[in-house]
Image 1 (cartoon, rainbow over the protein chains, first blue to last red):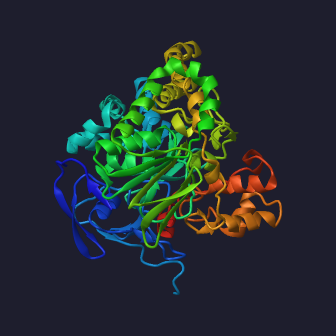
Image 2 (image 1 turned 60 degrees about the horizontal axis):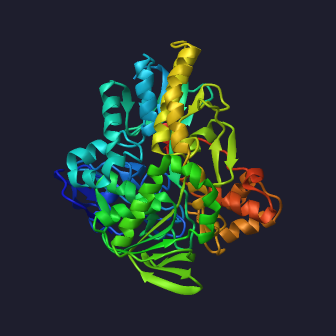
Image 3 (image 1 turned 90 degrees about the horizontal axis):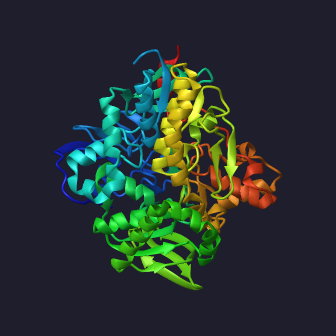
Length: 98
Length: 463
């Protein structure tokens, strides 16, 4: 969904998304790193289950919420990637039967 | 971090940085909090990283962006206490601010608080706007700054306003394949704006810049459709096509990305939560906190600087940050009233200059009526709780419901975004049906938590 323009002097670093290793560039947000690596959506709506990706890229739409290093509901468009980060989609939807 | 500061600034964008620099110069103790990873706000988003890691993008973004270099450098060199990655989720009436950082909730007190929380893009509720692939045009610009990324496939831009053209021009420079620019601006709006042109010529640099941006898009051979109607996004799991009407004809573009824009509006979440009085700005149809000429709100000790007050652009925001810091210095007894007023003169002159172009721009680019009240009842208004325009219309028709009641009836505004994305639309729909102005209908109350917080974090933060 996304691609780089120009060269980045940033190192390549590895993060984990849904238990899969992904190589990303230093100095970019988690959301943009994932959507550049071929991930097509970040989360699903807790109600309909429809796919969502960031709309605002600045922290107001909350469609980038992910679980980051065990912390739920993190705004992944505001957080820079760090080596070894473990990222997951929200574990449980409110609409799921518990 | 100390326990208490003279001035707590929330937001390290243009206004917040300017205020911090000025306040520090007057030896006021300052703490700046920002939810992003580095200073710069949206206009100068990630300026330090872009400059050091992505030189081609730093060059592409040009003088409007590079201007932030001096501001950010002055801020850093002043040795001002700054916590990035700090999301404020509540400010108590005694001005104790609670924020999340590194997974923990922390608390800091202050004698005065400056909300420099800036603006957000006006949400554009069209059919299909929740599909991955649909995002704001200014959002795409912010993405270029924050991560050096652009959409990888074909792009259509749609809407109105200066930032639509800025985004289009920057994407042209970044060699993105743009299929078309679909303008919702009508020819009639040029007539509405014309009487304000002589005044706008006093700040002609804005008009020349606008023409330059448009020329760049035309020269790239990108078709521009003006006065388009009935815009909608289509797809299953992600965006596949954009439909619209132009001169009565149905048109379709198959595309991977649609960038929408209908201007920007103040981000009032924090001033709402603090119960500051807000006013309705009819011309651009948004709420803004009621401010005096120094940026003071109706709540003692709480001020606003920058576009979180009224939309006026980066250079006015910077000047308003300085004014606000002068006022703080005066209130703390550091400078006299005369010193404050004298120091303010040059900033007021700057603001007057940049304000000259606003009436022209605001008449030329009013938000598209088709998104104020969505055309189709099936359009999602509340993205979080998936409430459609039709559901809100039905709830309003049950009786003269106010916004809090609409929230309780439909759950609109109760999701993670806390109404940031739907509040304006819900008010417009209610006002439209009741034959009132949104001014009379009101808005959602701002309630903590302003950001998602776990019960564990909440419990750990208790005194």
